Length: 68
Image (cartoon, rainbow, N blue to C red; front, side, top):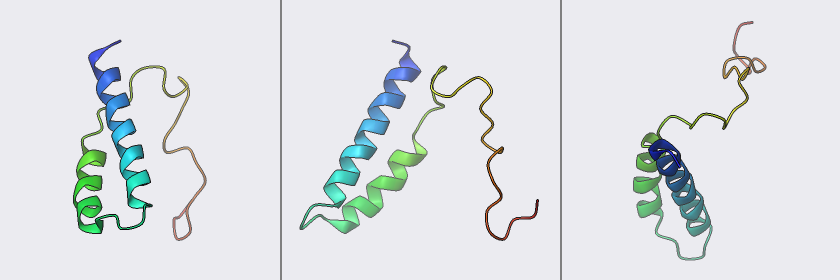
């Protein structure tokens, strides 16, 4: 497995675990609020093959308030 693939997978896994923790009773909201953005920002570029080759992240529908 390529190094970026391993980092991406690990970070996505940690974000998922944090989301599960955030939904538990008694979760420390300050911890979640501090860690979640740090994990999200640390995501490396997705490894090749995660998205189709013709994927365009800007090709979706217009959001409310956006001009066409």
